[in-house]
Image 1 (cartoon, helix red, strand yellow):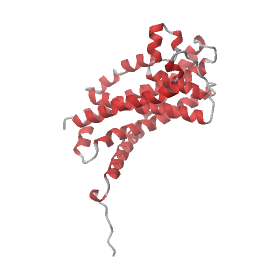
Image 2 (cartoon, helix red, strand yellow):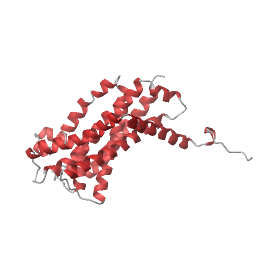
Image 3 (tube, one colour):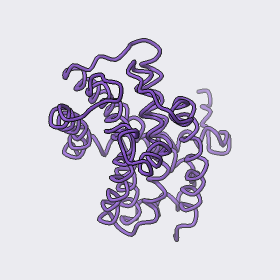
Image 4 (tube, one colour):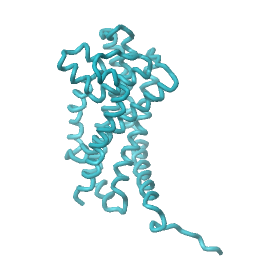
Length: 272
């Protein structure tokens, strides 16, 4: 009988084990969603409720600068809002794992700390794709008609790019807050972040000082850029509004550069 070459950790590259560890974290996260259908139903159902609520309740009372259909203005903003609120879900899952000792077990294993953080991020991106797909189908049923082709795909990518950056804020905050109840309180941070933006109302319709804050809000750039790519641009007068596509790409880079190292460093500093 010929000998079988059994690979051992010492014969595999560090990159291989990093990817393997990352995949195990992703698989674990998706398995939890599969075994907790109530949680996944709420997380995916909330976008539908949001679209229906804001579209039908407030749609007839809102105005778009320069005219136009408010539904076309609103839907890209709703997609951005869902991506923004996602960091609360990230923080909640991370703090739950931290308080239950799961992260301590990860740290006691011979696995890369960056794989734990990256695995959480990939899992959240997969869920974000499902959220966006559900929201867009709901919006189409309500009469939203975006431009197709490359612009649609680029807008979808920008939304995921924003979500990718906000994941690291969620991971970092999840490693900072003491318990899942405190993580739920992060809604108090996300709510004004989305309200003082161009998600629901154009900054030109706000008081001057508040409109300036909304214009420079990072999520406003993504909202304006996706509206342009979906075929419903809203003309702005300031530099940041006129370069929304550029800033929609730059803001997530800035957020990632700041919070990804903070998240990894915080994970490494946790007590064993």
